[in-house]
Length: 298
Image (cartoon, rainbow, N blue to C red; front, side, top):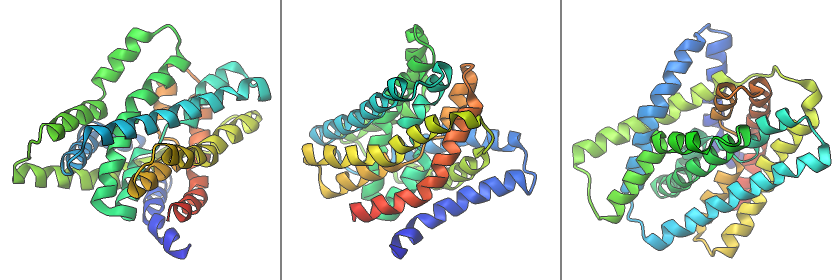
């Protein structure tokens, strides 16, 4: 267990540093918005593309990981919906935080994959992330604003992470190779993505929100940090995933909610403060739950 804590400690130190830079060293929110935009549109797509293209992938392998990712998104959505008859929460609050049950922090996931299994783990995690981004976005947007299917598809088709994944899969399956200078450049961009991305995660942490929504927050955090990893264990067994695929699926399922959930809620007029609070609590608790699931995966 001490070795596992040392595995995740660097990532959570970067998250804590991001919070300190914003709240104690007076780096502006505008600075972090610019940094996050750089990561989202340039650095992270480069990381996804390079990770997926560097290791040969078979159609059967890609299809199995797609099914596994879909199972996790579906399970998170269903379990979040069960809060309605059980907790009877405010409908608008429930719609806002439903995405916290299945969205995932890609920066933390890719970093943990590299620390746990090297480049092979990063390649598997990149596929899981690439497959899950469009599904998670479609579900989240449809819950927040039903009847806007056209805007959902428009948003999905313009998503840089999806575009990078599709291009990388096509490149890989066609058996193409990257020129060495381009590969080195993409690798260096990807290395920047993880560090800057985790700093931005820390800068988005907020403990301000609606106290009366405590049971709803606890419900969503329990789904994301406890229930979905169990679903991942079952899914990996049913799909007969390889050991490294099973390990990456478990880490992927155990990731806390991404800060993009807060951005989407704010943009669509939902309760973004409640989403930020739920995301922040989940990220802090993940520092304790992820070591447990890593021990299970080991």
